[in-house]
Amino acid sequence: MSVLSDQSIFAAMKQDGAFAVGESVALDHPFSRPHRAWVKRLLADQVQTTKYRAVRSQIFNLLQVHDFAGIQRLLSDDQLRQQNRERAHRLLARLFDIEVETHQIRTKLREFSSTADAVVDYLRSKVLSPYAPHFEISNEIATTADPVDLLLVTFDDRYHKKVRFEAKRKLVLMNLAGAIDQRERETDIESRFAGFLRFLNDYVWSPELRIGEHRPAYLLSEHDPGDYRCTGVKVIEMAAANGLQLAPGQRLTFVKRRLFRPGAKDIPVYVSVRKKDPAAKVLKLLRKNEKNPAVAVDDELGLMAVLDGRAEVTRFVEHLTRAAVRSGVLMTLEDISDTLTGGRYAAGSTGSSSDTSMMKFFARLGDARVEFIIHTNQSYLDYHYRDGVSHDEYEVRRIFDSGVAEFLFPRDIYQLDMDDLRERLVARFRNRHE
Image (cartoon, rainbow, N blue to C red; front, side, top):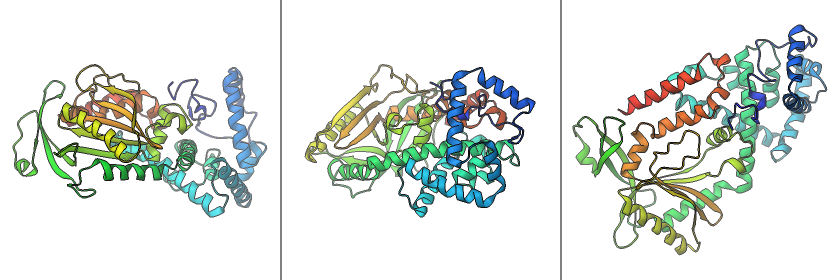
C-alpha cells in the first residue's frame, strides 16, 4: 500500500487531505467562507472525519488546550508556552518509555530531531543529490528540536507555507524516530551488533590477518555496451592496476578483502557489515506505510559478502554454519533465495528488479537475526553498474515508486514533478555508470 493512498496511516501528511498545509492559517476566523467549505468537504468522507478528529485530539492533548483558541493563546504567550512545553515533554517521555528527567527527555528529543533531519539529508546527499538545493530544510526548522515549538509553527501564519509543512513533516519523522529508538532499547540492538562482530572475528575470519586487516585488490571487468552487464571479471593486485589503460567497456572497482579458512587454504572475501541506522529505518517505515518498527524493519543487522565464484560462495556459507557450531550456537538459515546461477529473483520490495542475481537469506544466530546478501564478483558488478539492476537505480525506484518522494516533498510545496524527476535520475545514474 502506497504511503500516498487513501488508506495510508500517515493521513496527516497528505497535501490533498484534511491536514493539508495551505497558503495561510486563520485560527481566529472559524466561520469564514473557505473554512465552511473545508468543513463541508471533510464531513463528506466519514473515514477522513474520524482520522481528523483523532489527530486533532492528539494535538489538543499534547498542547494541553481545549480548542484552537487555546493554540492562539500559546502563540502569543511565551510563559504559557513554556509551562505547556514541560508538560508535553513528560507525556512524550511516557509515550516512548524515556526516563522522566528533564535532561534525559530533552536529550532524546534532540536525538529524534537529528534523525528526522538525517532522513531528508540522506535523500539530498544520495538519491536526490543533483537537485539537493531544492530540498534544503528551512533554517527555522533545522534549528528547532522541540515538538511543541514545531507544532505551533504549523498554526502560525507568520511562517511561509513551506516552513509550516516542514515543521509538520519533522514532527511525523520525529515520531517514527522515537518508536525506533524505543524498539532498539527494548531489543538491545547495540549489544547484539557487537556480539555479531565478535563472532565474525573469533570464528569466521582467518587468523592469518589481524582484526580489521584487509587485502586490497581491484576487480577488472568487461561490460556489455547495451545494458552494461558484466561479461567478464578478474582480480588484479593494486600494483598491476597502477597506470593501467582501460579499454572501452572496462571498469576498475576497488575492494578490500578479508580471508576465511574453511580448510587448509585461505579464501578471499569482500565483506560489508552494517547496522541499519535510524534514518534508514524511518525511510523503510514510510515505504512500508507502517509505524511499528517491530513489524516493518526485519533487517537491522546485515552482511554483504562478495566472492570470486559460485564454488567459493558455497564454501563460505558452509564455513559460516560450522563456525557457529564451534562458537556453541546452531545457525539456522531462513527465507533463502538464490539466483546466482539462473532463475529470476522474486522481487517483493518496491523498486526491486527480478533480474537481480544474488543469494539472500536470514541467519538466526542466538538472539540475533542477520540478513546475508552474497554475490559473486560478476553479480556484484551488475549490482553496481547494470542498467535496471544497479543499486543506485533501485534506490531511485523504491523512493519514488513507493510514494515516499512525493510524500516528503509534495509538488505544491517544492514545485517539482516527481514522475519527471524519477526518469531524469535513472538516466543520470545510467550515464554515470557508462
